[in-house]
Image (tube, rainbow, N blue to C red; front, side, top):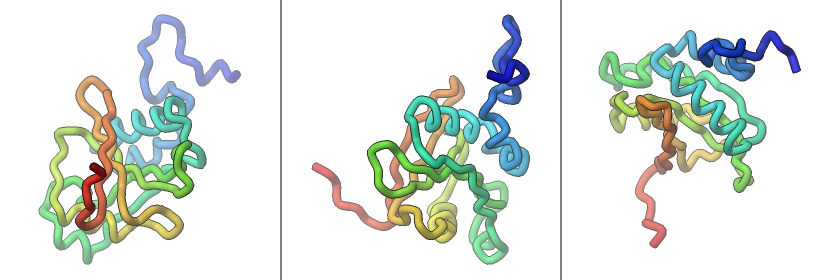
Length: 150
């Protein structure tokens, strides 16, 4: 193991010293409002949930979809998302990391659903909402009306 990627004993664990930080750093810098949630969600999915083929993907918002979003709304400029394969799934999924206090509108999600790349489940996205204590809770947001399971 590369010792340069290992935090020093007694040093506080910081995202920048974590071996996985390099995967999220470029988009964390582009979308600073998502940076903490992006890193925490990436680490959770990759190491705890054991997702495969996990990629950090930029879904920039173009001018036509930005016009429908109020200024300073989550997703105004675009999103850093994670796309990968859950162990129990046969289809790649989109995961949108965000802080629990970030607000969004239905227009935000309409614009996001329009940006889902080909080859990925397009009928739903997973919202990865991170709380102040770094706990990440996942919510499945479906496109359109969905009949309840029970």
